[in-house]
Length: 195
Image (cartoon, rainbow, N blue to C red):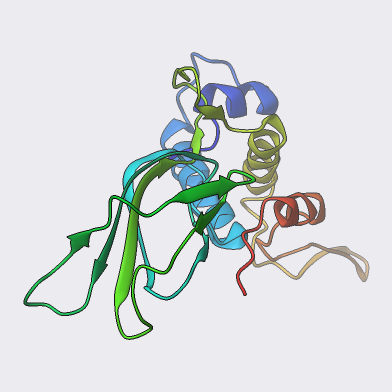
């Protein structure tokens, strides 16, 4: 899963497309930043087909972890391991704001489990979006590009607190590979909140 393409990052860094010196390293960092973004946002950003979310069967408002939701395939509940998952095809539901699944009734009691199988998330850069599918927002991709660029430009200073130049002067670097403040602020906009 990559929230941006290698070619986009290389263009931002001013690297020639034909220069493959850092391709493997940049690809690894793009993947790492993409996973980091999902962790910070507390959700899956890339489009998932047939993803499963389990919950207490007495819940009626579910904050799904992969959205925007395209479609709900089925709702099921389980009261024990012997009977396993049982489909509940007659339960009415509604998708609210692309991320909340509201059920018209409980699938069971608090002692039972419920689950929903659905498709949701963003189509990532480089993939073709079909009608009804949501493309990754441009600001999220740009934030990933900037975070990877920051890492690349500071890769030799990560972990370095001070660099003594000469005659008692030194430079202090931001030696932590944390999110850029603008990136952290943007990710709050895409964060999945749970009660």
